[in-house]
Length: 296
Image 1: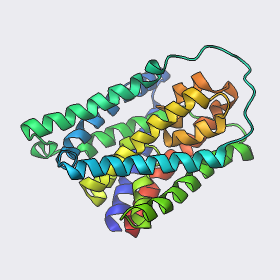
Image 2 (image 1 turned 180 degrees about the vertical axis):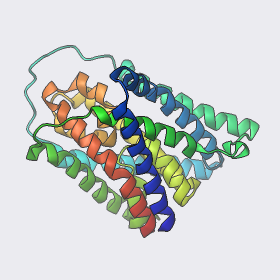
Image 3 (image 1 turned 90 degrees about the vertical axis):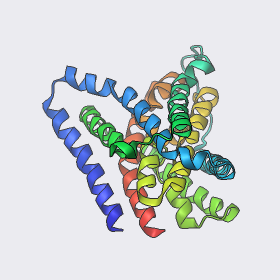
């Protein structure tokens, strides 16, 4: 419990420091910092590949991690989508959809960065520990930049419908964890921990790795990463008709990595929903991770 509390205090202190520094910086400098987030996330994924290589390349264990993550991400997508499905929305602007390949281009970069880390570690046995570092070192740099990015967020009046999106996302994750625990050997508390990143794979992987071990961290990371892939597929095919579900399925990523897809595939009316839901889930994820780790 003490380790989890220390981790969450450090995370929020880093976010707060980023926000304080960002609030004193010029808009141009903030944009440069935020623009660097993409590269930092890829570097974080590469370092996570180094950290998780040992468990992912152990034959049966690696296969089990991927299968468990696929099952949990599918259940979370199913329950969250079911809670947010509404009468199909009218399409106001029938503009052509971007190609599916372009929609997945960002995910492909992430996959390549992660696999590169796994491959390097597998063939050279190189690890960040040999340099006195870990993926957490990059995580704190990323969180500082996220804190800088939060300076620009402003909200108008939050409607009941807007507030229902993050609530449904959390409820869907809790229900999915319950079913996952019935279908696997994981307890409900462990299942809650594995899904507690709420779609923020660049946080859940290294944080749960630090608090609960490499195997749990790898499943949590793969679960949240697969959640993002599934949300992009949903956005591409059903985002215009089911915008609330599309935003909810994106989880914490709705305010950052999934936001361009939401802008492309949903009516502009739902952009504030995405930012509000994504920000709320982003702030909730570290608390949930720490709480569920303490319960295990």
